[in-house]
Image (tube, rainbow, N blue to C red):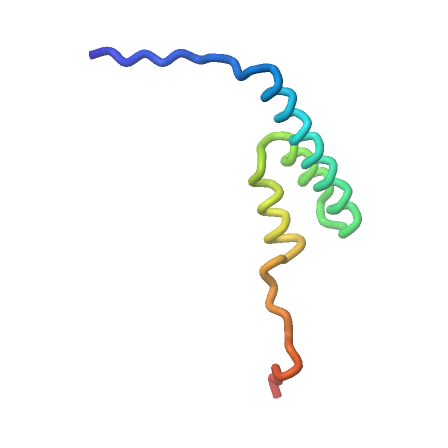
Length: 77
């Protein structure tokens, strides 16, 4: 039994949507990383390559969205 796979091109609207999403993601990553002095060119170029992994990694490692905030009753002393 021989398996064959064929490649079909995505429809034009899907391709345009992907290009727009990649450009928006890359621009946002570059501008926000430049504002925070966190390797803007790296984030901008990586944002052009794939979607949505660069944004997720940026939010975790640069913006630190899972950082624990200290409440009023948290005392380390």
